[in-house]
Amino acid sequence: MGHFFEDGGFTMIPLLLLGFLLTAVAGLEALRPAAKLRGVAVSLGAAVAAAGGLGFVLAVVTTLRASQQAEGEAIPIKLILGGVAESANNLTLALVFLVLASCLLAVGALRGRTA
Image (cartoon, rainbow, N blue to C red):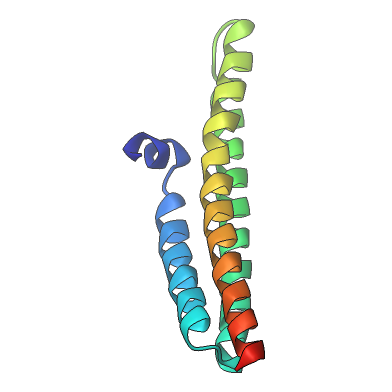
């Protein structure tokens, strides 16, 4: 798990914090449905998605810069492929939090409708 975060880079930390906050708000919404929390959850979900996309793009840019300084013809291709694979960790973490929060929000929507 540590390797996953190390490969993702520094943007994994704010993404992790935003994701935990989103999950907490979605959990509260599932336990006690309230119209106020839905807006907060949607905004946090957008922030998590944007942070995941930003982390991915920043990591790809870093990879492309590093590949320009590499020697030989085959090395840049391997660097780019490996770098893009590591960059995808940001998107993976963001999507995990978004799926988890969406499930919790669905429970809250269902409970709010029957209450």
